[in-house]
Image 1: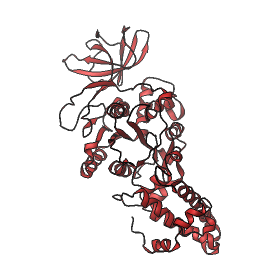
Image 2 (image 1 turned 90 degrees about the vertical axis):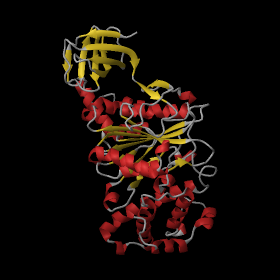
Image 3 (image 1 turned 30 degrees about the vertical axis):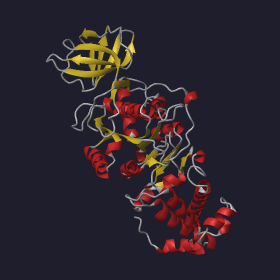
Image 4 (image 1 turned 60 degrees about the horizontal axis):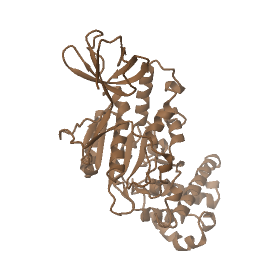
Amino acid sequence: MSIELTGLSEINGPLVVLEGASGGSYDEMVRLRLPDGSFRTGRIVQIEKDRCVIQVFEGTNGLGLTDTSVTMTGRPMELALSPELPGRIFDGAGRPIDGLGPLFSEKKADINGKPLNPVGRVYPLNYIHTGISSIDCLMTLIRGQKLPIFSGPGMQHNKLAVQIVRQARLAKDDGSKFGIVFAAIGVKNDVADYFRRSFEEAGVMDRTVMFLNLSNDPIIERILTPRCALTAAEYLAFEQGMHILVIMTDVTAYCEALREFSSSKGEIPGRKGYPGYLYSDLASLYERAGIIQGVDGSVTQIPILTMPNDDITHPVPDLTGYITEGQIVLDRSLDATGIYPPVSVLPSLSRLMKDGIGEGYTRADHSAVSNQLFAAYAHVQDTRALASVIGAEDLSTVDQLYLKFGEAFEQKFIAQRFEEDRAMEETLDLGWRLLSLLPKSELDRVDNDMLEAHYCPEEAKALLEQGSDVM
């Protein structure tokens, strides 16, 4: 039953205060009728006895204290859902903006989601192919995982997101349906057009659901966008049996909107002005990824966030790292040298990859190759530091080989063309050719049988002679 009240007691920025609303509930949607007969939408964000604080989506310009009527709908914000979601483009609040008309929904669902029973979760195992060697080999994305990308302002995370959307697919073709839910949060118009145009040109729109929240849209929309996207993903995964990859960029813009929203409510700020509940709020988004027992589909997340001043200890990446199962870190120095994607290997990891790679999933030698590449590249960093002190010409023969390996690893393995989709077999074989630049005695993370099968210095030498043609 809807309740209508007339008159507001306070207007403060995007917020209005309504007295005497004893029947209101948290997150309930309301409709505000202006004197000219037009309507605006709001949501209850705070309740103190019979006093409700409402955030107005379209802003409070033109509202009056005495002549504004508020109707309580008795329902939370809901998203229209249908099997026709793939191929559609929505704004941050779930309204179609692709010119194809309204969505003929079969149901509506609360955008805040439903809590999942932890006992009902299934441990993720199968991996999702991205075609990007540094990710597929060294920080493998597992179906049902949440694996964020930590980037910096001005870096190529948007380009990387487009490449992942274009190339991502299930590793095994078992007849399962795969789809993408892409949420752009607080982006500029040219960035939104870039995403839209890139997906259409790549021919992946028929499997993609887009939610576009622009930087000039109301701040409340920025808070709703990831929740709308995850609600669509859960419906397609858990009710339509699809395997859904959710990519959200930029989560930092969401957190800044949350900070502004918290400040407007007069809440006590926490670290760097963010609300004290930032951790639990991010967890309410990230924990909506996973696999449920007895359900065919899955939800996998790649949240992308920019670190202010490239500071990985900033509250947003710091708290994200506590919740998620690893991270992919982009490196500004690699980006400055023209390497794409500029993945910083050593601080990146996937905590779930150990159980989703190897025989039966990727290839029997995957884990050994990954560990050896990590170990060798870590030695490269130590060798480069030593060379900066004593000079490269005074290094030992083995250390000079490590320098060659490091340069080839960055130019041939990490770097690849934007349109290049490398198969897992190709990636692992490339890893072996790079490791063959080093003496066998240095490869202590692989067993002798693997060395006999894959160690080939001749191929490594030929690889060096090819030049840097991957840029």
